[in-house]
Length: 421
Image 1 (cartoon, rainbow, N blue to C red):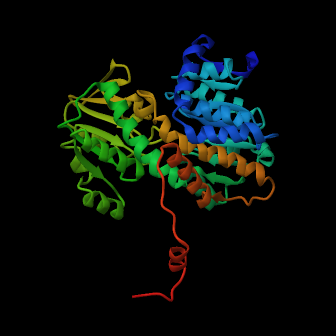
Image 2: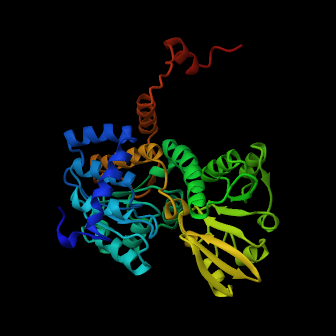
Image 3: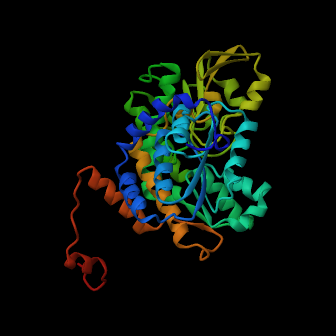
């Protein structure tokens, strides 16, 4: 067990249920399990001190166990105040001896206390879900930057922030953009976010989605998955976009595309999945019909103008867990999960089968840093295509799916220019 000073969780007595939850998720993560077996044998992370700022869920727990068994000294803080599974956090400490700092519903002060706690271990590798840990290192703990080998980033939002830092010359450590792997964004973002967002909405509201008009704000990988699954549930789907290519794709996929100013007049449920701020403004909410439901499935709670709503609303009351009713101009606006990630605030986040590939990427990123200590330039590294393909191959094998192979003649044809019509 970790020392008493090595954790801050809600209640260690919750550990029994958390361990069962970790076991259940692990049964559905065959790729990470295979990597874990190799890591436990070869110890590729021996000597590394690794601090992670990720959603503290059963799936994340399995990743932490693999990293520890691979030889790393691991500590974990929550990347979102509402995404923590308290029983999992307790089990990580009690059953696996992993210092964990996470309490569901923690305030901002506690959140940053927890981030600082994992940085107090003086890590040389960090894992981020939104770039908060890297940002804190660069802003307030710059003396630790020379100790760093690198950091891996899990989210679209985080990669955007890190690439902006690189562009401005502010980035001081190498970063591995795990989110940019096909086995992450094409599956985690599309299938994971698509399903888990609807799961969170339904758990929070118990609303029937069939026949409702759902407005999906953004048509990136997350928006694509959400729009597709909402349509599958019988909803009428409207997409809002700023990118003409993505908007055209949404139209060709059979969705209505319109400006937010027009969508607010007819939408029943609004979901932001953009990674940007101010997507749903106070003016937008003022124009929505009575009873409109607003939520966010982008990483941070800035996509909805919550501060302006709090200030302008005549009253606020909690009508269900994770559902707040705001009276705005004589109309009721229902905000889910305080404007934070609804799929983790009100539900359990992505299914384990999807996180299996994402966390396999994270584990391999840690191994990448261990193998390349002192050799890496300060920049944002894209995912290695061979690594991505290997993860996909392992996933297919676990699913019992077999692939054809190119013949030597086919390989020659694809690599030549002499043959034509």
